[in-house]
Length: 252
Length: 252
DNA sequence: TTATTTTAACTAACCGGTTAATCAATGACA
DNA sequence: TGTCATTGATTAACCGGTTAGTTAAAATAA
Image (cartoon, rainbow over all chains, first blue to last red):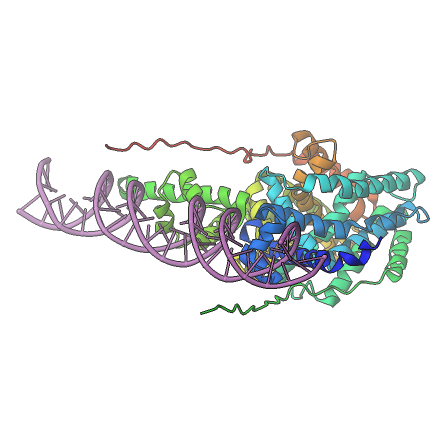
């Protein structure tokens, strides 16, 4: 229609502010948690008045849920791409392990939010996550189960439980990033430096190759091949705080 | 001397209340996090006046640090016992994996606090944990490095990086408990039920046995032997809230 | 003008921390 | 051994800053 350009400016500007708020919320919540986050800070960081948060989202809780959903959706998007049937079952698993590592690496906020959500879950209160999980996480797990059972059946993989594969894969990656800040104090190196990340990524996949495959050497070779095919993405540096000092004029 | 019984009442009662406060704090902080925890709730749950918290600990922060330290100390205590030199390197690793699982299982609060600490670490503010980590966690990692390199040298273990062993072992266990509440929504079973726990414990060690050992079958057998030697401890049920309704008498 | 978007100013509740007072065990002393 | 000042443990009541959420009015675009 003609409406394509008529109702643009207004609607779009609003949409933009909404997005700006959401991005600011993601930043705030991922670094401070739900109860630690401050709505004033979010507003300031989004360069809008606090009341606007409540215009778009009816409560802090709601904004939090929206933030989690936003970032989760963005991340889960192409997680299933690595499960193309042109790969063998073992290759699918290794690829998805690498993909998982890279996903955490490039989307640190997601990781933080998820960790907090998981802790929050403990105490009973279910965010808006169950739905999201059923739609995003379950298909992924299903693919992994399929691949594992497939690989075991054909003999490519050493007989093992599919859940164990999931826990080993996700667990090692998640724990690496989870423990990284602490490990700095324990290890004589910085776990989040590009060099360390590169090494970790490599040996994680190599280990999986050697652990999962019946023919260990073949598994390791496969891991190396995949590592060459999937270079490490650059991590966006989200850690640095970008405080926006907004000068508020006040009529005297 | 005789003082053993004379000077009891006063000092001991105080010590008891202090402990009661600490326990309540651990409960509160582990379920709500630092910023989510409420000092009023801690006081109520410890059946003392809020001011008493500040009599014993100078701030909420301080109380939090004390809580973490307390629980961490209690947990790390006999983590090194499994590294007795009478076991082979591989056996030491498998035992320590099982021990780690059981430790998380029986000390859920520790796990929660640690997770939160790790998240907190992200944002820069280092609790009182670095010290604790250097003294408690580092020796454990050192033992694991030693065992891994030992086992690889003698040929008992398949050649691999020691850090990878650590991340696989800890990672899988931590992630299991971390993701458990969410998994309930995804899997057709309850991950924290005794039955599921038993199964998970078993296949985690079996997997490690098959993954780490050069002779996979031998590794699996070793895992089974250790499983028989180390039965699963009962988890203290700390999840249920035990609200103590204290009736305060008031003189009219 | 009119509907939508954005803001400044405000409020009520909450929450960490303080204060001043009370209670009870202890120890000194006659 | 009984009396009383001392001191450690504990409490009720309060304070002031913070923070989620509201309101009513202004700005903006159609």
